[in-house]
Image 1 (tube, rainbow, N blue to C red):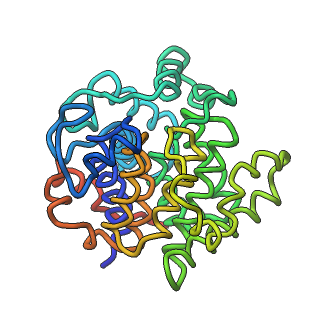
Image 2 (spheres, rainbow, N blue to C red; image 1 turned 180 degrees about the vertical axis):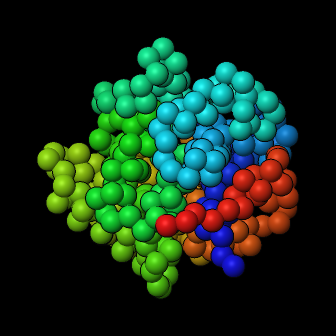
Length: 315
């Protein structure tokens, strides 16, 4: 029986771990020793299969949903605090590679205990720190068969725990619509992603008061044209728009989990997050069984992660 939680989350963790050793390296630097498989050391001097904050916060969110059965914002933030302070949901018992927006939000929550006010809505807080961990919230909304408005509200709330600006929220919302289209759609991965994005754009055009924010994602409106964009026109920075574009581009210009993820992480810069964002969607489409066995078996705490993914959500 298909387990969408395992497919999506293991895709996220695999992409994160694949990109971890070359994180922050430029594209030119990565090109001198391109990633061809799961390897260790590099940026953080960690063994092969090590994953970063992307996976830690994804797993913290997943654990909260599993234990609570609902989206409990206070419980989620409490889990994020446990990650930051006590190394919960990490491969080695300590947190590392912590984004500025995420750190500020968790510290604000510790002081004020209000999950609705801890994430900054300033324009400069448009890093990819909420997009990288949003997969479990998307799967929750899908499993609960939420309507579009309910799903957008839920995904935006979870994004806003750390990144409350509407631009970051939109990235997470578009990601949800791609998740749903992969799971419900037919045809190629590009066809399903296009269907999800087109539906997402239509929903935001109906609900957004400021359409200017939606224009940041205009390159994703026509994936046939976007697939023709050359690699030098694809940015892979920590800016949320760049990350979403790089992940989608890697998926629509390849035809397997392995080739998509290798293309994503070899773009350089924020390699772990581009890998994680692409990996989640690739995992849902190709299935966890498509992940190369050496990659999967190298993952730190693999059995624990798989056990965490082993549940169903009642409607």
